[in-house]
Image 1: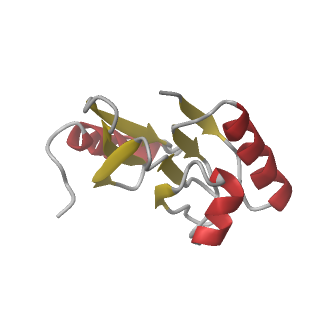
Image 2: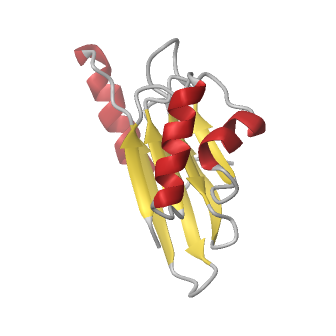
Length: 135
């Protein structure tokens, strides 16, 4: 299994989406965590410009204005996934391999720069390590 994590510094430009897609394809990514997408929303067609046919599923934490944004994507032919926690600064998924039933958790983080938000950030990470926070 290949996992790639990358601070992409924005996916708004088609040229950047092509660059990321090419890299993910070249390295046969099965799971991908992208931070700083700078996207408030992402349509399935825009996601295909990034994940191609291989990374066909995703969850995201939207950016706030032009800051932040987290995307975790995966190949659904290889992994099943369950959303465990979606926060302001993090996204936690549980994956199960369809090949060997290995189950594992993945948390992707994009932390705040502002000092006054640091306590909330750390509290969120502590909560994400516990039981699922998604109904």
